[in-house]
Length: 197
Image (cartoon, rainbow, N blue to C red; front, side, top):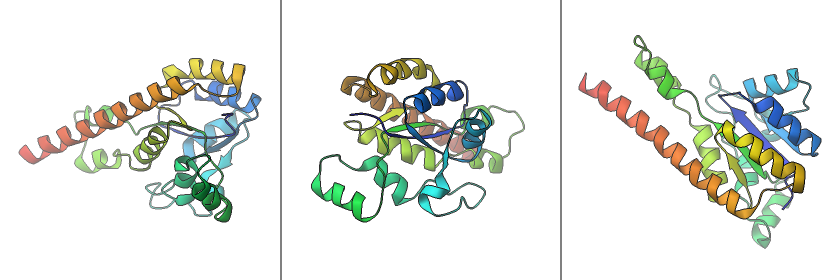
């Protein structure tokens, strides 16, 4: 399956401009959020703002931006399923074939000696894990990347075939679920420490 649309929303922006440039050259449409969109646009890469997809602004200091059926429907739709295809058409949802997301730096934030509970809580990502898990669940059709070290490998596949093979998609899904599980464990451990204090 050729990748036609990607959603990129990353906290760690290392390598993302170069990766996005590969997508652009392959004719892949890129949807993005706040800081990532700004970085890509500054590099001259055309980007669709997620709010232009959802028709809804980012709100509450960015706490709510991608939690929307026009995003999650695009990620979770089972390609070839008549009911899903009908819903995509009727609701004007464009499928998303590639999700590139890494999460707010919670672990790095709580490692700071003077971090407050309020600062730590703001680094608990909600939309990111939701998109990662949606893409990982639908790995039969969607590629999910959570680690920038994967960009070169996936870029090479896209340059060659315009797509990512099924086994690689499944491996990336496994990595994605491990990534969100580790993230949640870190949050749980931090909150336990706060309760003990």
